[in-house]
Image (cartoon, rainbow, N blue to C red; front, side, top):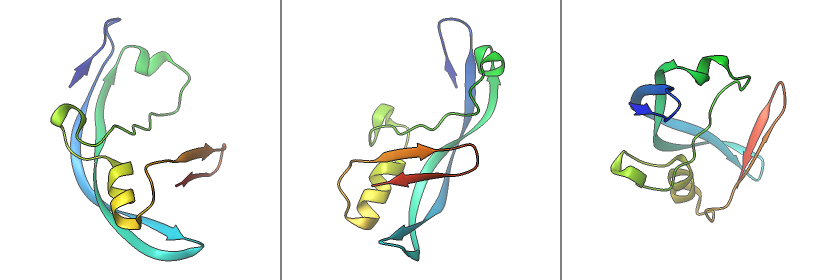
Length: 95
């Protein structure tokens, strides 16, 4: 659970799953990862216009599990640099 100064709060669970990714257009690869799934929100999380939150924490920050970026870097050998591109109907995480 995380509470913010203005009164908003969120809570959720850490889950383990596999991320499916492509390297140079060749799909079918997976990387095990741990990430958070939000199960409750209050305050500004309800009234703001944003559609969601994508969290890319530094590996091990707060001692609360892994990092999607760290896990993808470990699986692909890519450097820890990324670009996140979103549109109204699709998106891409490029490393």
